[in-house]
Image (tube, rainbow, N blue to C red; front, side, top):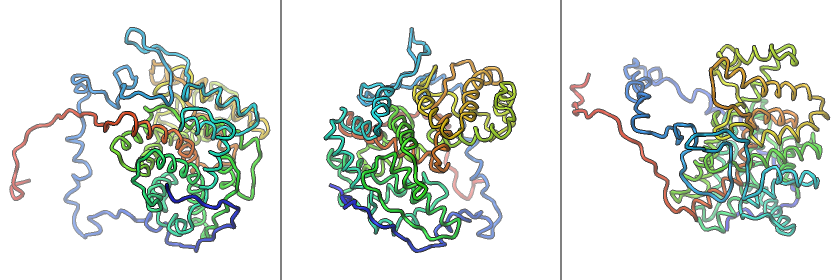
Length: 485
């Protein structure tokens, strides 16, 4: 069993000494070698040599039937495993061809809409329900749910010795990066970290479910304190809070939050808890787990994957994009003005010049993302309370006009569904969540899904994941150092 069974009674805040050097390593971390050594840059090929050897002709992928990105030629995922955890349905295959279909997400056999609807109607928090379901394969009884929540609750405190190491030694410009390293740091506080028994794996998962919200919040507070030359104050743990309440409490502290706000965040946590074994971060977790490595290494790798802007980081980019559109479009009810600005984004003339409309398009869903549908349904009430219905309407205009612009401007012919990322930033902004916490909240929620997939990989498949790469290179004759030019 791992160490973190703490007395979770209300504690006072922990004050850590101010350390103005906490972020110094971020600055000037990579001086140019030629400048640092006083030598001319004779080895600049270090920075461009790869272009000569690493770029493969596109036709080779077709010739050798290479599944780029583990995708089939029609864009569907290559089947690499079997799972009982979830099903992400976005299309049918008829006569070998992808046929678009309404999106559905089921967790352990239950439709995600039902898993979200029931606790909302009962006016209770549902994320813990979903996490228990993912970890055990069945919905908890009332007694089992109370026990599960108590187990998470008693692990929320971070050891004071840990706090004196973290966050100074893990300081970073990215909270996701801090989450990675702080997860690895917890390995040192586990008396038997390489134990992969089911009992220990469940204990690690519960420990991280309890601790990650606090870790992320302390990282955010540490960055704020450093920027403002203030002393870092770690707020106390609240006893008996749900995951949604805990996240809002550690972020907003004395400002407080409403029950409706916590209920909406609970919806977001449920929708982000699990999304199949094929998404990049979950597959990363499974790949590492298949090697038999420890849980902390597997989960930190999954967090690193989720950080990427093509994966979990997309919610941050979508939020920035919506704010950019809101600023540059003067009449939010004018379809043609919105369409014209979307065309500028696609033509790399606006926003981040990437040519992407973030939040539109999905690797699996072709017609609808059921998570986006649910977000809109439950966000409307809070949007009305906060007087931001007009901005919600703007996002819906982007959802409506974006696919048309992508077809007409970029010539995209495949179906384009709305991704939950399009609405995530809007919901978090209503809840007063800082933008650098958008993706960390995603990671906190997805922890339950990662744990379920890790255990399925450890105790189910039993084989290390090792795909093949075909070599394509010339055979060369070795040249002695003195003869090289």
